[in-house]
Image (tube, rainbow, N blue to C red; front, side, top):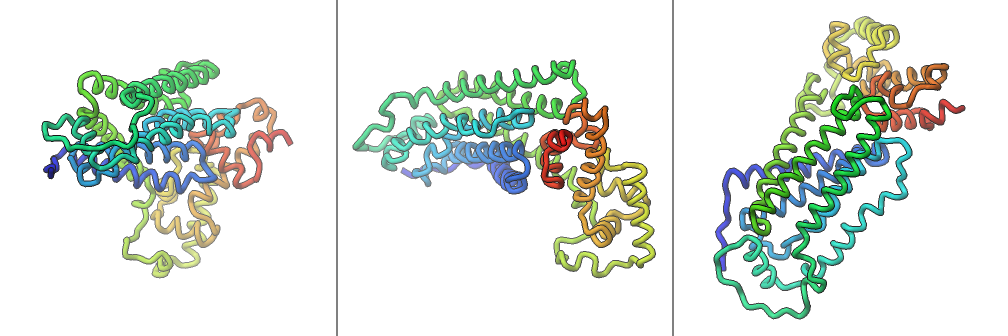
Amino acid sequence: MEISPNINFIAALILVGSFLGFLISYFTIKKAIKKNLPNLFMGFFMFSLSWVMLEGWLNYTGYIFNVLWATNFAEPFNFIIAPLIYLFVISQFKNFKKERVWLHFIPFLIWSAYCLFFFLQSDGFKYNSNIDVMQLNIPRVDVVQNFSSDPLNIRNYVNMLTGLSFIIYNIFTLKLLLLKSRSLGQTIFNTTNKTLISLRNSLVHFFIIIVIFIIVKLIFKNDVGDYFIFLYLSFMLFMTVFQIMNNSNYFNEVSTFLEAPTLKYKKSSLTDEEKNNILSGIVFQMDTEKYFIKSTASLSGLAKRINESSHHVSQVINEKMKLSFFELLAVKRVEEAKTILKTDMGRKMTIEVIAEQVGYNSKSAFNTVFKKITSQTPSAYRDL
C-alpha cells in the first residue's frame, strides 16, 4: 500500500537541521583530527545527532516506507550520544586517559550487533513495524518470520535504556564540572572560568534535551512525538551555524567566491613602502601592545588598530611573515607562554590559567597549539 508523505514546515525544519548537522560535523571532525580531541568528540556527537534526526524525518514524513531497508538504521546512535558529550567535557581536563575511551562505546557496539536481528528482517516485517511505531490506521501485510527480530525481548526497552544512558552520563558530567569549579574556589553557576562557562552551557542544553525526551516519551506512545526533540536539536544547529558565521573572519576579507585563491593578491595596489608601514604597525601591536593576549583577537580587530583594511593586513602577514593571521597569533601566544612558564610565578600557576593569560579560552586548544609549535606540552616544557 502506498503511503502519502507528510510534508510540512516542521518536516522542512528537521531536514534542514539534519543537513546542517552533517555539514558542521564534517568540518569539525576534519579540522579536529590529530589536533583537537574535544572537538573531535563534539564532531562525532553532531554526526550522530544528524543521523538520528534524519531517521526521525523519514518517520515523520512517511518516506521511510519508500526506503524500508533503512528502518531503525540510526537506533544504535542512541547509545553513543551521551558518552560523546561526557568525553567532550572530560577530555578538556587534566589526566584524561585516552586509552579508556573505547569503554564508553561498548553499549553502542552491543546494540548495533543486536539490531542485526532486526535489520535482516524482510521489508514486509519492517513495513508492519513502521505502522506500529507510527500508529497508522492502515492494513498490515502478512509476513513469515524465519527468526526473531528480538530474541531477548529487550527492544521495547530501548527508550528507557536511552533515557537511563542520558541521565547517568549527565550526572557524571555535572560531577566533573562541580569538582572543577570547586577546585577554583568558585561555583558552576558563578564562575569566571571561560572553559567552565562554555561546558556548563553545553550541559544545560543537554539537560533540556533529556527533559524534552522524558516528557515526549511519557505523553506519546512509541516514536510519535519525537519531532519535538528534533525541532529543538534543529534550533541548536541553526544557532551553531549562526555563531560560526558570525565569528568567521571570511567576511572581513575583500573577496568573491569567483576569485581563484592564487589570484588573491595579484591586483593589490600596495607599494613596498606601504607594506613595510603596515608590517611595522603589525609588529608594534603584537610585540609592544601584545594584542594577541586578547581572547577576542581577530584579523579585523588588528586591522582596525592600525587603521588598515583586513585584506591588506592579511596580505602583509602572508607575504612578509609567511604566516596566516591565525598562525601568527599562535606563534606569539606560545612565545608569551614560554616566557611565563619559566618564571617563578609561572611555575606555580596552572596551565589553564596560563592559557587564559595568553588568549586561549580552552586549555586543550592551548596544549594542542603549544605542542604543535614546540613538540612539547606546556607542562613538559616547564619541567625542563
